[in-house]
Image 1 (cartoon, rainbow, N blue to C red):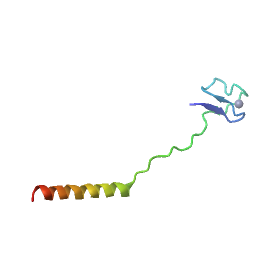
Image 2 (image 1 turned 60 degrees about the vertical axis):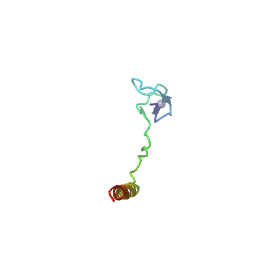
Image 3 (image 1 turned 90 degrees about the vertical axis):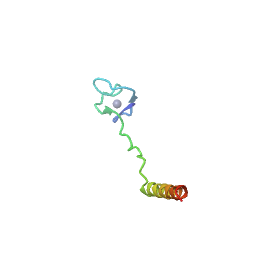
Image 4 (image 1 turned 90 degrees about the horizontal axis):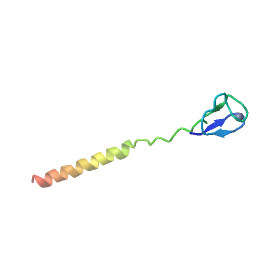
Length: 66
Ligand SMILES: [Zn+2]
């Protein structure tokens, strides 16, 4: 992960002892990453799928044992 200096905007690939190699700032760190978009669960869709499978299995059951 790239590091970025808060003061001068210098970008580096690894942390350097003593701060930013360009300006010496101690604010040389990894830029704040945007919160990664977490794949939200889809309860409605999941419920629908379960219902669908339930109906399917029920029909299969009926068909098999009738
Ligand atoms: Zn700097």
